Image (tube, rainbow, N blue to C red; front, side):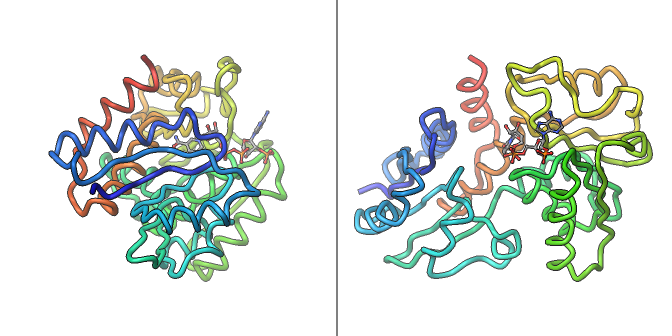
Length: 279
Ligand code: NAP
């Protein structure tokens, strides 16, 4: 019997995780040992769904919106970094004992680390919503300093306070609204974690092009469209660019390794992801 893995969330029908993970299993000859499916689980049904998945001996449980925080109360153990972030996207079920992990932060730090070290880098994070949280934790964990720019300054402040409480204020964490984005010019890495530029609003961008320069690395969280206006302008300026799909891919690669204990086949999983995202 293969070990069963599954993604739960609402909505989940367009999830790319099954295609990505199953392609990885196949490439490594693990398709008889692992299988990855998906199931819609609503907010009201989370507790029952977790019990069912345990009873049915699901081994790996990938958790997506809206359950990443709520799921924590149904776990037996939590990995220290997932605990710091306060969100779980990956669960291992070992003989009925559920341990929660978070790989979302690796979706940001790993692709950046392919280009440069994050130690002592100045990062401008534009956005302070759900995705920003794991991104920000990852950057601080890797030794960057951070300034969060967000339309609603209270949300930037809340995130900043939460980060400061976890990192004991030993890293520089600042916040601002969007009124002084010109400051971004002096940052090493610029991240968009707002929804500005996401389909169908592809003419939007979080930052005027004039505040970008060719020394910067630009990271986009949005994966639809493939190339946002922000990414297009950053490439025109000469920045090194990380696309939104890379964040999805890298959190998935890290998760694959937790489920299988094998190195994830990056190129195969990337191809499966891209074929399903942009076909
Ligand atoms: P969210 O919690 O709804 O946060 C949305 C963010 O965008 C907030 O900071 C919000 O600012 C800002 N925003 C929205 N409309 C704006 C506007 N008109 N002007 C200025 N700021 C605006 O969403 P999320 O879950 O963090 O997702 C954010 C983006 O990341 C989405 O495009 C999502 O698809 C993408 N994402 C990608 C991945 C990946 O793996 N690549 C993973 C997760 C999310 P306020 O606080 O002021 O509302």
